[in-house]
Length: 368
Ligand code: FES
Image (cartoon, rainbow, N blue to C red; front, side, top):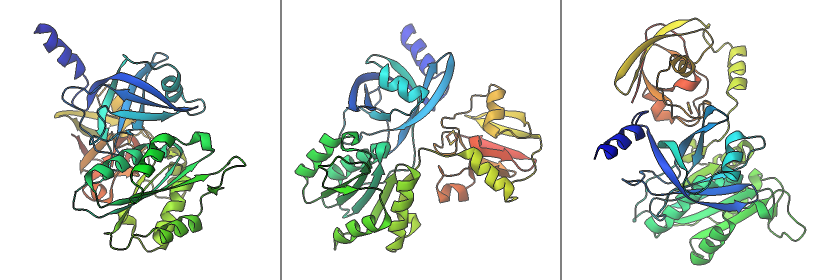
């Protein structure tokens, strides 16, 4: 009894946003990509298809955090999993590709993210998905969920990879296509194909996307739902194509894995859109506990809070993952990157502490 109590306390030592998962299995998907499946915790991991978790690891004597999308579906997969592609020189992605083994326990931040949707058995949707490289990961979780939850919905997937052997989940995707021939159409676009490749090749462009969509529009279905995830070039092409055929930005879900927040800040500065940098006293409430501290000129609210050892949640530190989301109760901030937030969240006063700097006095933020 005593041990149980102690364990629970240790698990939650950082707060309600955190938990631990034990690695169950590591599956090699391609030469530079693995899927890591976790044991189901008790109670089961609560997530929506397309969401991500943030891993917190101790590497080289330092705590590092990285966010990875779940490739699994809570509706079909008994064990939650993330897919990790090796990044050249990337500390965490290389560690996860080379060294992670079953049995290891990893601390995580609980699932987050808006790259998801609600499912209903009566829906007749056309899911149009455009993925590039490891951007297939959250899309995979959504595709699996569509097939079991919406028997009348269809999926068109355009998937860009560098070469045939870099196609992640190739076998699973082939199996889905055979199982659901009338409901799933997959178009692989290979940028550097072998001589025998007969499918789409080269860079994805707007015309290719439009041609595929024109040939695969399913009359009688409800409004399409667009999802795109991958490198900026792939997502920008997909969005231009979606918009050029008359679809509204609001029906497009986009998941970014990369943001150059420093370059963005320089651009905003040169356009005169940022307030003068001054040291400001602010108040932040984290899980019911309030802290007043100074944010030195030039620092973000998250940086200043972490310098004071305040247990503020965070992961990507580049305005994408929303782990650091808080609600601005009073005052004004300059938010350099808001890509992780939806329009309605911004309208409701939510900010990302990792990309926000104080722009007035009287700042109060609540992080739930
Ligand atoms: S830490 Fe990821 S958005 Fe702030």
